[in-house]
Image (cartoon, rainbow, N blue to C red; front, side, top):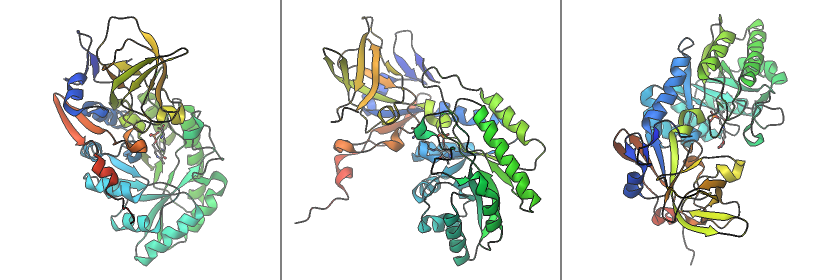
Length: 417
Ligand code: LLP
């Protein structure tokens, strides 16, 4: 299975939009993250079009892929942003995004981050604890302004996804307890530095089903009614992100069904809808291009040792996540079963396990669906420079981030004599 705008030509070689992946590897080297501009735009527009009636504010979750070139393209499409740090806010601003269309999520906002966000006129803070509410109120009062807030409600629904990326259950660190919400809103409504604006939930990531969203939405709407009965008006409802993508053989609820269900639940209410999609905007719009350094046949297993590693794409080893791996040029030979591993000194350094591949030393491989939580989770472990990032736009390839150099890695280090 290939991803949008990735095609196999008649000669068996892969092309991304109008450029052969082999050409991209030759020009920019490997490992490289390669993104399709058309795929990113189409993913964004799929939300906009499916939700045309509700006309939501689509706040792209920056953590999924925060490279300026990606943010700028989404800002130009009209996206708002969901951030979780002062650093992400500065990225949004540097990319031409609008802080007034940006919401600030996360459990541990520092005072300086709150100040920065208020100074830039952030749209709303998603508050995740009572202590945080007090801090935001204090900072706002000190600057003689009012901060708009939503509470992130933990609706206690099971998103039926990987436990590491499920966030809507009571046992998670995220959000405020559903049972505590009315009390917290009452406290917030009485604060002079706070303007109650919305209600939010984010129940997890890589969600393929509809029912967890509908359950969470109903619980939030019931709260909105309870608040309104107490004279607290909520202006927007933020359903978070979490929509999954097809990594392997997942069946996803179609976008229009998702939109219809949400719009149906919200019908007749004067509530603005906000969404925070990350993975579903960029995930299937990018791949990791890597080269086979060595083939190492073994007694129990064969290894294909490639030049990308767990430091470049940590999802497989961290979540046991599946990413399809496809040869850039097809060979006629019989496929052999390989574990695709990197050069890092950890047994956990693998990208794929037990894959039938017809490959030789020096061949290029594309690791698919690596556009989300790929580069943003990359590290320099083993003093490996992080890959470059290339944005394909038709027949053009733009380097949107250069490959790091060794000098970048040691730039902030000092030797004590
Ligand atoms: N909003 C909030 C408050 C979030 O915490 C997240 C993701 C999103 C939106 C975007 O969720 P998405 O639409 O991308 O599912 N590193 C993991 C995923 C962690 C997600 C964290 N929060 C992975 O590689 O699967």
